[in-house]
Length: 471
Ligand SMILES: *[C@@H]1O[C@H](CO)[C@@H](O)[C@H](O)[C@H]1NC(C)=O
Ligand SMILES: *[C@@H]1O[C@H](CO)[C@@H](O)[C@H](O)[C@H]1NC(C)=O
Ligand SMILES: *[C@@H]1O[C@H](CO)[C@@H](O)[C@H](O)[C@H]1NC(C)=O
Image 1: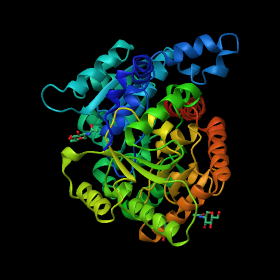
Image 2: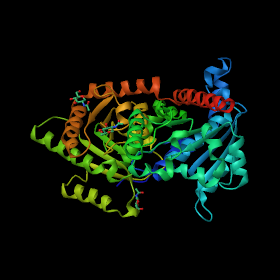
Image 3: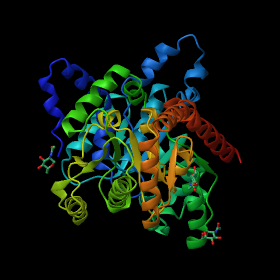
Image 4: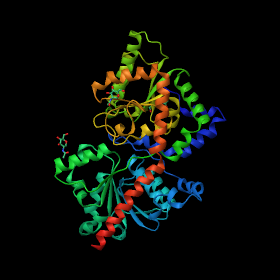
């Protein structure tokens, strides 16, 4: 088991770096600890000052250029979140809230489902929003209805947020639907319920994180519920500026790498394969460990000369005492690979681990991730990705170029084992893949790319709402 990262603070010079890191990236990390859905774990830094600093940087380069959503200035936007927590969905919507505030839009926020009583996280996040000029409203009541009626745009976040429509808007619902943009981040079966999405066909648009997920929604709504999707926009996510800053700071990266490796007991020349996701069957840590063990056996059988291989599993939660957690540890003990496999608790900081590993393994099962943001984060750190050929991963990883794909399920174990060996034996190939991944991030998975994509959607939806008003 790794020593906690806090032990680093013994080194005085390292401390300021860690503080800077944790301040800028705290939310990304917090979020990973919390988000557990089988489908998504979007991770977003809440962008403190982000647009302000962009503004300075972009001065003189033309407004539209650096801020694609400038046209939202003075627009009234209501954001409706199913819940408020440090999970992917709500934080993503918060990011949008700040983006809109950054260009002078009037932004109101509603959380449909709040825990009863005091909740520190909710309190904290609301405080953060208020600080950025986002008005936080109560989910029910006349103010909510009035705000929805007056808004230029209403963004519903996640399928479940659909419950808010009838419950609160009641007879006004049809007046609001033509200006609703529905942002969907999930694809598990239980979301395809009329209770949640019966109004979906009537909204101005749906925004979905990957083409595969959009196709799945189209199919499921039609086959299961006999309803038709509205105009659907696919918007791939992007890496936060903060993450890119760490990924591109070579000195900081090296320092982090050395220290994490030291804490794990991994030598500098060893090769580490890391899976960074909350530990659950859907994320495939069990199958990854089997593949890892198989690769060790193959290396022995074929007498391959390779550096020591290590597996790092970031995202454990032993307090949860799940059967799955014990299963993983039992497997490691049974196969006697304790010195090769390192479990790291759920953590607020993933950047150090991205700096420390050599290859990211994305082993999400079934339909995979809706998007799977850890992949683009790893690519920013110039890591190749060994991913399942499912979900958003297939839109992020270019098979053979920025990583290698393997099938989901048990069929994927041997192909993954072989891919592990390929990257362990071909150093050049591994490094080239990492560089290609980084280049891909730079051309399509940055925050500003995402902002451009969202801008196009918002423009379209506003236009439709306007046409509707005038028809
Ligand atoms: C991980 O969490 C477990 C259970 O909460 C705890 O006992 C253990 O000390 C933690 N390990 C580290 C390295 O923090
Ligand atoms: C939905 O998926 C099923 C199974 O893959 C397929 O048979 C069916 O034709 C698809 N339907 C639509 C409307 O795409
Ligand atoms: C990925 O590419 C390899 C060859 O580089 C090929 O054998 C494999 O079938 C491909 N996998 C997918 C899912 O396309």
